[in-house]
Amino acid sequence: MASPVIIALDAMGGDGGPAIAIAGAAIALVRHPEIRFRLHGDKALIDPLLAPHPRLARVSELVHTNVAIASDERPSQALMRGRYVSSMWQAIDGVKKGQASLAVSGGNTGALMAMAKVCLKMIPGIDRPVIAAVWPTVDAECLVLDLGANVGFSAAQLIDTALMGAITAQALFDLPRPSVALLNIGVEEVKGLEDIKRAHLALKAATNLPFEYRGFVEGDQIGHGAADVVVTDGFTGNIALKTAEGTARQIAAYLKQSMRRSPLAMVGGFLAQGAFRVLMRKMDPRRLNGGVFLGLNGLVIKSHGGTDATGYASAIDIGYDIARAGLVAKIARDLEATIGGIKGSLAADGAMPASGSRKSHGRT
Image (tube, rainbow, N blue to C red; front, side, top):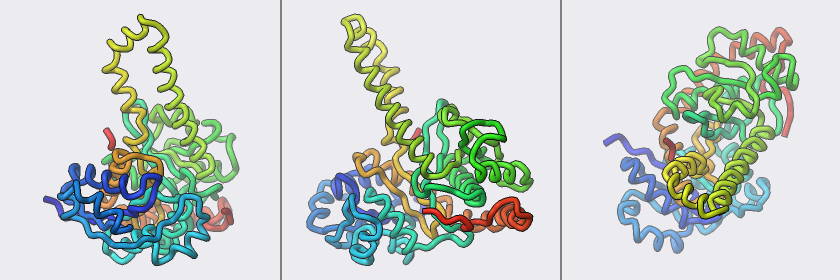
C-alpha cells in the first residue's frame, strides 16, 4: 500500500454540512484506501454520521469546533470571526502546519480564498491565486482556469496562470507536455484585450516552455478539446462555466420532454436508454466536481456547496491526485526556471508589465 495522504476536511462547509462531507469521504476511502482524514467540525454532529462508517472512523481524526463560516458571510467578516477557530480555517491551517497534505471545503468560496491566502501565503512570484477545474470535452477532459478568483489579469499573470495550469494538467491527466491556449473573442492575433494579446505574443515567442502553446481559442472550442489547458481571467471563466452548466441542464430537460412527447417517443427513449445513461454521465457535474486553488503554498480544493456525496468524493479524488504529484513544489520550481525569465526580459524591454503591477480586485 502507498504511503498515506492526509486530507483535512472542513466538515461544516457546504449546503449539506457534515452529512455530505462524511458520506463523500467514505466513498473516496474505497477508491483510495491509503487516505487518512482530519475532520474539522462539531463532534456532536459528526460522531453519529461516522457510526455507519467504521472503516472511515478508524482512519479519521476528529478536531472539534462548533464555529462554521456561513455561505453568505463576506470574506472580511469570515476572517474576523472565524480566524483560528472555524472549521474552515483549521482545515487550511492543518496544511500549513504539515498535519495534512491538502484541505477540502464546500463552504463559502470568497471566505475560503481569503483564509487560504492569509494562512498559506503565496508561492514566491505569484501574487494572486486562481481557481482551476476539470472541464469535459468530446473525447476526454481539459483544465480551465481562472474560474472566479480574479476579475482581471495582466499579461504577466496570464503567463503565470498558463504555467500553473500546465503543471496541474500534467498531474491530473498524466501528460508530459500538455497543450495550452488563451481564451479570446477570436483566434486572430489582432483581436482581444491588450493584456491578452501581449501574453499571446510572449508565449508564442518563448522557446523553453514546458508545454505546447496553441494560441487563442474561442469559447465554443473548449468542449471540443482544442487544448488541454484553457487560460482566462476569473470574470470570463466563471461566466463560461455557469453558461456551460446551464446548457447541460437545458439539454437534459429537452431530452426528457422529447421522450414524453408521444407513445412512440417513449418507446424510442426506452430502446436508447443505454446511450442516454452514457450521455447523462458525461454531463453530470458531480463527476468533475472540485476547483483547485493554485498559486498558494499549499493545496486547497473547493467543492461545490450544493453537491452530494458523489460530487464531494470527486473533489477529494482531485486533491488526492494533485497531492501525489507534488504540485506545489513543481509550480515553485518551474515558475522561476521557465516563466521568470520570459517575464523578466519582456518587462525590461517594456513589452509588458511585471506580475503584480496592475491592481485589481470521479472522472473517466
